[in-house]
Image (cartoon, rainbow, N blue to C red; front, side, top):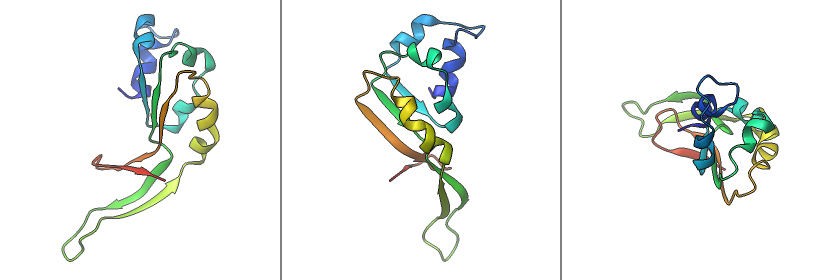
Amino acid sequence: LFFDEVIPITSRNSNFFLPDVSAEIRTLHVRHSQNLRESSENLKQFENVDDINVFSLIEELEHQPAQHGRNRNVTNLHLDVETIENFIPFISHFPKLSVCFLGGLSSDSDFTYSL
């Protein structure tokens, strides 16, 4: 599950509040930079997370699949400023963190981008 799908069922403000779920989660996948601004109160409940994958740093502006006569896809990429600003404060909420990926997802989801 992606982090934006987990928050609605684990947030105390949710109609579906399931406190035991967040304690069992070990890996978070973050695909949107706004998720890195989640409140400290909500992040505290994910105390056992030891692996985080942040896919919002590198975003595709335009993706053009390979066409006849071209053997490569053409993609324009940019770095997301909101991710850059909020990444370190976000991961500092996870004391058991041992593995972290920072990059992006391709639009066709066949691979990830990393620096």
